[in-house]
Amino acid sequence: MFLGIRSQTRYASLLLTLFIVFGLTAAGCNGNRNQPPEPTPMPPTPVAADSESEPTLTPTPDVPPEPTDTPVPPQPTNTPAAPDPTATVTPQPTDTPVPLPTATPEPPPPAAVTNTTSNLRRGPGTDFPLAGQLAAGALVRPVARNSDGTWLQLDSGVWIWAQLVDHVPPGLPMAALPPTPIPPTDTPVPQAPPTSTPTSQAPAVPLSTEDTHRNMLAQLPVGNRSHHDTYDRDEWDHWVDDDRDCENARAEVLIAESRQAVTYRSNGCTVDTGLWVGPWGGRTFTQASQVDIDHHVPLHNAHISGGHAWSRNQKRAYANDLSLASALQATENGVNRAKGAGAPDEWKPPVQASWCRYAQDWIEVKHKYSLLVTQAEKSALSSMLDTCTGQPYVPPVQPVQPAQATPVPPVSASQSGFPPPRRQGRYCNDFDTRAQYEAFYAGREKPASHDRDNDGRYCEALN
Image 1 (cartoon, rainbow, N blue to C red):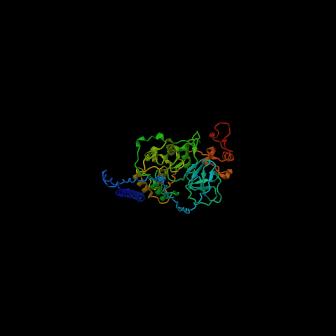
Image 2 (cartoon, one colour):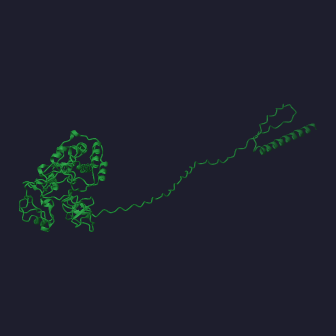
C-alpha cells in the first residue's frame, strides 16, 4: 500500500516537472523574441542517490532563435551634384551716341592748271615784283581777276597771267588791286647826280600787314645759335640752273628785278646790263657786275640757326629759292658786304626808313624754313616792326646814266596780235605757240640757243 502511494507521488512529481518545463519553454519562446535571453539558471543541487526526494529535470537552456536575413539597404551611390547654375549676364543696351552736327566746310575754289612754267607776281602785271614760279601742270585756285580778266588772283594772294592757266572757272569777281609800283623806264629821271644818300619820299607798295609779321615772329623757335665751326659754304650749292634754261639762279633774280630789259653777254646766258635799284640804300646800277644777289638770311646764319642739320639737297634748295621774293634780292654790293652774316641785332640797313621791310623779309624767310632766332634777334626784329607805318619803305630810283646797250624792245600785243612773251622772250618756253614766237622775232635775229642742234629750226617744241 505504501509502495503504491509512493509510486503515485513520484509519477505526479514527474508530470508536474514536465508541465513546468513545458510552460517555461513556451514562455521563453513567446517572451524572448523581443527581449534578451534570461541568464542560464544554475543547475540544481544534486540529490544523493539514496535520498528519498523526487528527481528533478534540468531545464534545457533557451537557444536563441536563428537570426533571419535582414535585407541590407542598398548603399547610396555618389550622384554627382548638379553644377551650380551660372548667372547669365544679360547685356544691357548701351546708349548710341548721336553725332553732333558739324558745320559743312565751304568747298575750296575750283582748281585750274598751269599750261607752262609760270611766274607769280605780287600784282596783276609784270611791273610787280616776282613772287615765285610754278611748273607746268601745277594746280592753282583762282579766286578773283583784274578788270579786263588778263590776270588772275590765286587763293594765296599772288597773281598769274590768265593765258598761262587752263580751265579757269567762270564768274570770278574783280579783286581790289594793289597800287601800281614804280614803272620801269629806260630813260632815267634827270635829277641830281648819283649819290649814296637816298631821298625820303617814295611811293609805297603794300605788303603783308604788321600784325601778320608779328604773328609769324611769335611762332619762330627761340634758342642759341650753334655749329659755327661746321659751316662750309661749298655744302650750300648756289647759283644752280634747275630749269636748265642756261640761266642760273643769280641770272633769274637779275632778270626779275631789273627795271628795264636786260642784255646778255656773248654766251646768251649771263646777264650783262640792266637797271637795278638797291633795296636798302636806293642806289641804281646798270652793270650786273655791280650787283650782289643777297641771301636775305645769309647762308651762314641759316646754318647756325638750324640749317646745319639739313641734307645737301635741302641746303641747295634754300640757296637757290626763287619761290619766295624775299629770299634772294638784287642788292648793292657795298651794303651786302657790310652786312656779311649779321642778324638784325648785329646789323641793320643804314636807312632807318627801310627797317620795317627789312624785318618783314627776314621774318618771312625764317618762318618758311623754321629757323630759330635768338632772344636778342627777336627783340631787334620787334623793334624794327615798330617803325612800320602801314606802307613799307620802297627806295626811290636814283638817276644814273644807263649803260650803252641796245636791248631788244618788246613787241606789244597791239603790234603783233599776241601777248608779250615772258622774261623778254629769251627762251623757248617763254612762248605759248609757234605763231607767237614767229611774230615776236619777226625781223630780228633769233638766239642761237633756240637751235641747239644747228638744223635751222628754232624752238622745235612749239606747235
